[in-house]
Image (cartoon, rainbow, N blue to C red; front, side):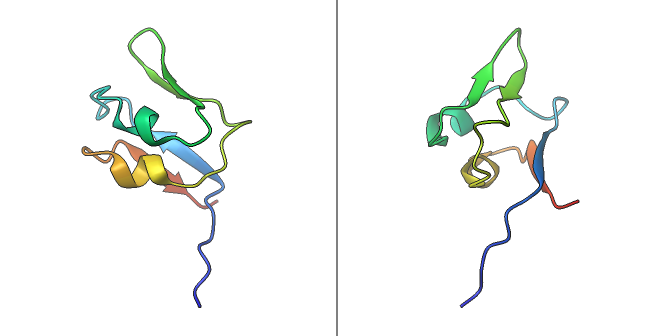
Length: 66
């Protein structure tokens, strides 16, 4: 069985994000918000499940492993 290694953080690519809200809709911890036309993640509450990465239609959220 392969274990999923959780990323160390997520990076939002603001030049790509079109603020569609798909990521907000799937976030199980409700830590994503659009504030002043920009997507924000409260990383203290984020479990790094990567649902937002998988659902983003324009690939504006990236997993980082360093």
